[in-house]
Each structure stands twice: as C-alpha cells, then as structure tokens.
Length: 280
Image (cartoon, rainbow, N blue to C red; front, side):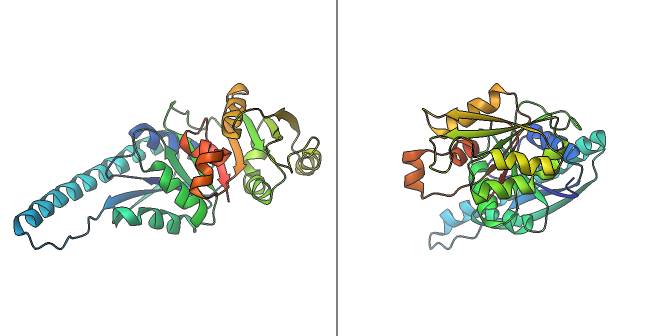
C-alpha cells in the first residue's frame, strides 16, 4: 500500500520505548511497505562561558549524554531489526545527529520524501507530541501517530477504519491519502459530529458515501450530536467501535485558542486512542 515508510525514534532526553518500536514495525507490516528507521542522536551545542570550572563540568556532562544517546540509538536499531525479521518487514536504518531544538526540523525534512511517517506518542517521552506536530504541519506529508500500548500484532491489518468527516478540505485530503488503507478495511464507518462546526450538518456524509462506493468501499454513517469537547467525543466513539485506525484532517490553531476550545487534533496528539492517520 505504502512502499516507503519512515519511523522516527528518539534518544534524548527520553528514549523511544522498545514497545513503540515494535509497534511501528507491526504497523509497517500491515501497511505493506519497506520501513526506514531513523535513530536521532543528540548533539549538545557548546556553551561559551567565562567560568572555566562550570564550562568544564557542562562539557563533561554533555559528552556523557551524547555517548548515552549513541548507545540508545544502536539499541533502537537492534530492536527494530529483530522485530522486522520476525514480521517479514524490509528494514533500513539510518542515524542522524542533531541538536535537541532541531530534531523536529530533521524529521519533518526527511518525512517529505516518504509516503508516510510513523510517530509513536506515549507518556514516557515528553517530546513525542511536539515532534508529531512539527512533522504534521511542516512536512507536507501524512503522519500516522500511534500509542505505545497495547502491543500490536504484525500483519494484522486494519479491520475497522473510522473516517472523521466535517466536509473540510483537510478531512478530504486525509481520506484521499488514506484510501489504500480504507480499501483494505472490512468495516468503514464515517463519523460526523453534529453541531461541532457549521459545516458538519446532518446528511453531509452522503456524497462521501457515494465517492467511496466509486472506489469499491461501502461505508456506514454515524451522526452524533456533540455535547462535550469534540476530542473527547471522537475518542469515545473510536473506542466504542473498537477501531483499528482513525483517519482525520489535522487542524492548527493558535495555542491560546487551542487551550480554551480544545479540539480533535489536540486530543489525538495528547493521547491517540488507536493508530491515527493525520493529514494537514
């Protein structure tokens, strides 16, 4: 389906857990493509200081962290290689060294020449969400964010796929880019949150159903009136139908507005309820 996949892993200050790496490989096996693993090693910039002893202590600690980062990167590659061999996934590993504040730029830049970038999100790595945002909004390519747990089964495929639909151009783009997944699904459901946006009105999914039928996909429509934040409602719906994949457009809002209003993208990037295919 997607012959050129990218999985990004971190080493500093927190390391991407082994389970997240294995789950990424399992997703790659279901997506039918070759996987390129990016292990990001940290390069801590030098600090200019007139206090010799303080500078010496910083340089020593920085060197220790860089060595630890390099060791974690090698372990990440080894973990991915074992998982890929078991799952029958073609794997290529690359290591790139970057300063902490440039990691998002590095991943987004590399994602531009891949079909899909896989990004794990979990509570053990604080940078996960920020990097996923950077790739989603800066790469120009779709992103598949997924939770670290539970453990995913290689080659399991995606039985139930949910399409979040509000009639927007971003939602349309996400569905178009996810069409290879949608066509493979055994159960496709269209979720419409009534009242969340003026465009999300009753019956809006009718022409999307027609479009999917033209691609050989039969889809059911679920229209729900929303009486709570859209992110909560969407996640609850995804869990209620035991979705294997959620497809949705990614929306960027000013940070203050996002804090006040919430939002589906905000909720998904905070804690994805299942693997989520995002496009902006």
